[in-house]
Length: 388
Image (cartoon, rainbow, N blue to C red):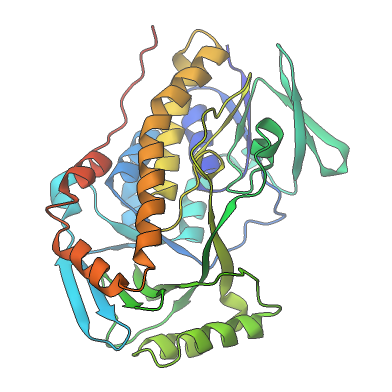
């Protein structure tokens, strides 16, 4: 019998699994290191497999999300000089019953958090380690605070403390690329509602624009950077990206000029190889802590929502905690490993010198070469678990 679950991390995976568990009558408590849930300068794509899982977790939530974001209707790909390489319509709603939805990360976090009682989210709790035995898990936080629970879920991202205590596989692997991103209110004649526009160059650079609705635009840029060092100040970050993308067709320089340097997030792109095991005893991992993915297919959050639904189902249904975590892991690993590997291979390929040709071919053949994978990816729907 599971009475209390401790979740490390109030990100999208942590919040969604807490909602799912509490719907099952399980006391799920989230412990987050941040002192405040501040807006994050990012947007993200929600697609049918993730939206179907969220709807199963919290019926009616997808309508709230659609009202808060922008449903993508067209994808466009340009060369860095502005020349159009290709475009295609997005018809996920018709095929899979849910759209491709662009939304601000912080707005999604707010909507998920609103589904929980405030007392279920504990801020300023930085997990440093845990200990477990046959009866319980004890989680230790900075300041000598401790909490006990029946189960511990590490939903604390790619640099997961829970993962390091559980598995100890070190830092994530630098993928050889740096990323920059920001969200701002912005309009430009080339950036149309319900569209995603990407620009690419042959020297390993990509720049994307995403309509988030309500006047917000999310831009995201990436470049090959062998050393992976971070700029020292926000001003240096902005100067660095303006220099890297100098000479690119508008609206690249215009949107960079309009972005406050303090709002630009600079990050190295990292990933990890698939794990053989996510769980030990009463402890398991979820989302990026278990299967981090480089940004290509937009599946990081969406697969975390799938994890959340299935983990809650198994914890509610299985005869024991060990059986529940084993069933969860065995169910989720094959699917997430396929997505992880396809992500990693595709992302590396997209940054080769002939990326313009490669990405154009991907778009042209999207309905052919990728049709089977798309069907498998997006048609995934949550189902009720019945353990033997």
